[in-house]
Length: 102
Image (tube, rainbow, N blue to C red; front, side, top):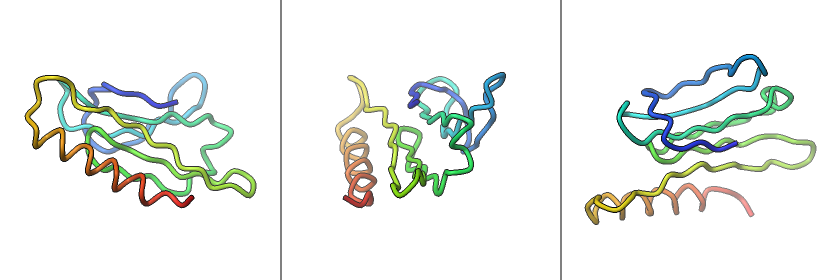
């Protein structure tokens, strides 16, 4: 499950009780932004890589059987941000997507 507006600071992971799922997240400011990905406890040991690009973009690569899917959680800038911030977000997202093998 992908989450946006977590408003949690730092690059961390925590178990989400009582289910035992794990949340990987990133954020820089308690007042806005922050993204995360929750992985079911059945797949926690299958997490191969976590990549935190910014407080708006995070990805997790998993090994599930013969497949290696990548999940990306992204939170696009809202109205009111300057053009350079919006451009930087889209450039970072494109870079993240281009790293995912097809």
